[in-house]
Length: 179
Ligand code: IMP
Ligand code: MG
Image (cartoon, rainbow, N blue to C red; front, side, top):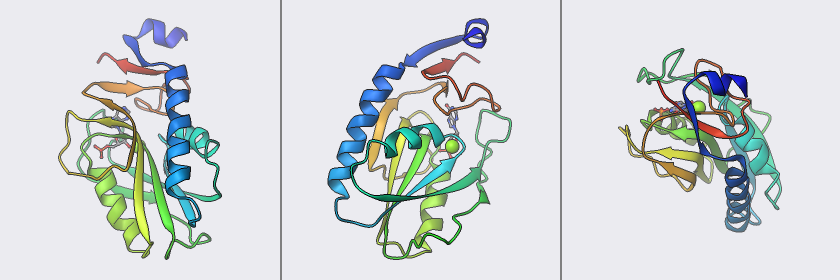
């Protein structure tokens, strides 16, 4: 945790709190999606740790796929342009399935707005969204979030999969980075 000590960082959500909330989300999603064909689509890279923990808290079968989207580059502010750098791969059918998108954090909302429309082209039964963090400060596009781990007013967060220029993803707690 040396890195955390030398940079200006403060724990905002501890690993124990995350773990309890992820358990609750897993139970809630399992109840809602019972007896349905669920495909979980994780947004790389930020959501991979959250997704790994969440799917192990599901009590229903689910298939997994991943997409990768880019809007930030090396910056901490969205460029406003979303592009797909890795799409779903077709070995898992999305048509008539219930798709659950797993995202790390929603900021402007542009990424999820784009992704939801993109996935709807596959004609799934529905596309639901589960975001670990709903960051309210800079929302530009309304996105309907079906499951939210935590609401945070503002700040740049790292840890538990979240990065700043590819650093800090491996930290087990979530920190606010003082820029
Ligand atoms: P949006 O398109 O502005 O909603 O941005 C969503 C993406 O930006 C997320 O998937 C994250 O990868 C990244 N992002 C937004 N805020 C943060 C943050 O506080 N920490 C780390 N990544 C963030
Ligand atoms: Mg992301």
